[in-house]
Image 1 (tube, protein in one colour):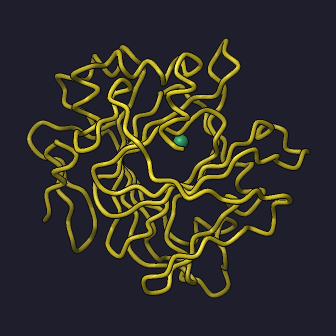
Image 2: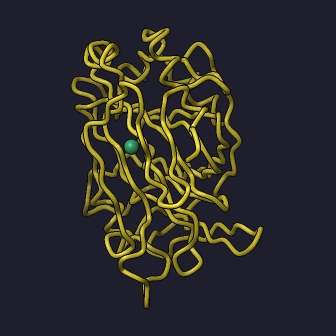
Image 3: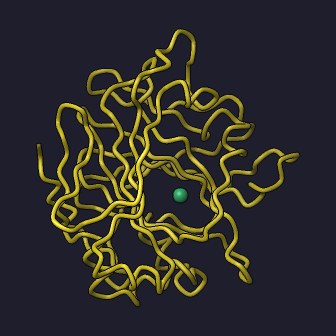
Length: 268
Ligand SMILES: [Fe+2]
């Protein structure tokens, strides 16, 4: 067992099964697993895949009882996902990917915080405002591949469809703080067989490959993220702890318009 110290929570990773264990009085409301067969329709290549191959495990609503009312007050939830090592037909293992829906009464969709706790991540972010118009070709205004190491965190800005990819050699573990009532849209990603970029891995090489189901994919920008302590994102300090200490800094999750420029600057 390996303690996930970056989380600053009593969470342990079983290095054989890659399951998580929550200790002391840390609670987790539920968990599940996704296998390769369940990612059909989203992968770079699907011929002859092992349907039962374990791709990722997710753990929802992780919280200390003493902190629960604070999370509820803001309508936030803290989750963790573990993406397995290895590839499927050369493609790095990944989550299915989705867009977030609109915040009630605002012309923006919900942002989200992702924090890498273990391993190396790449987040593909594609800005699409017409994500909710299934008859239209998605117009990708911006395309980023954000490379994030353990101890770093990023903010997914409004309108960016996103998926999480394990680009390292071991397991990749990340947390997210999301708004509980945020609607999630998986269908527009499924319709296009994934996001507009697939990440392939061979030895030390990582190749970003265009998904041919999209027309007009812009040049993908590789990004190294920048922290912003005013928004609660300090590299080396866990996001859970940062939220408990200064919950008001996470107001951007509910009112992103006020912080639009600051959020953009973190992914330049
Ligand atoms: Fe999300």
